[in-house]
Length: 280
Image (cartoon, rainbow, N blue to C red):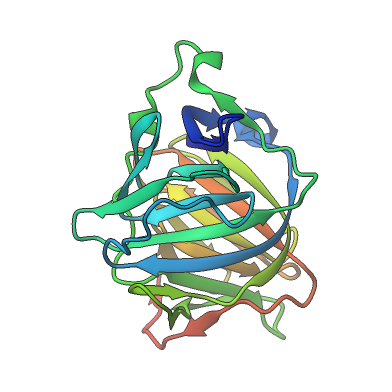
């Protein structure tokens, strides 16, 4: 289950929240998945400490996906905690708004996806699914390391998939905040694969960002290269032709992830860093 908290403005012009989850339906290979729904852009942000924003509404209707860090949000209803792997569905774009602060010493790294005005988000309140795992269990995720790690995988002229290690390029802004440029996007969807899952050789169906919320995976290419994806990592998948790649889960967690489909030609703020590749 993918934990999701909805935040909206009531008729009293005050922000309210409720606990819930992203509604996933049975799909191929035993996976659970949501449908795709339209977004206009994706961007990445990092905040080291409490920015002291004060009470504020959100600038747009959006999904905020936490990669690392723990937050305490405050509304007139009370407080809730947002953890790595959680999704915040914000619709409080007017009124008194909400407040938040970083708990602990880990930076808040997150992805903002701006929703298309017609987007219907597959959100369900927690009460709609009795007997499901606790929402705290769903967000049990240690987060990422010292930056937003991103691995790019693409097809070379030899028709084999290759990869390079890198990170999301962030530039400094105000209030101890760093952010990326917007990447034009078409849709977002969510998927979950049970622990022990694997997928044999295949190509990416489309150029997309894969945001891992939970689970650790070993990806391999045909020439024996392999890399690990951890919670909070981003995969920039561009190997839409050729021999493809395979993956398998390596821990006891399910693989919970979001797929952000990019617009054709969209620029992604990926920066490569040279590391020695691991081989089988």
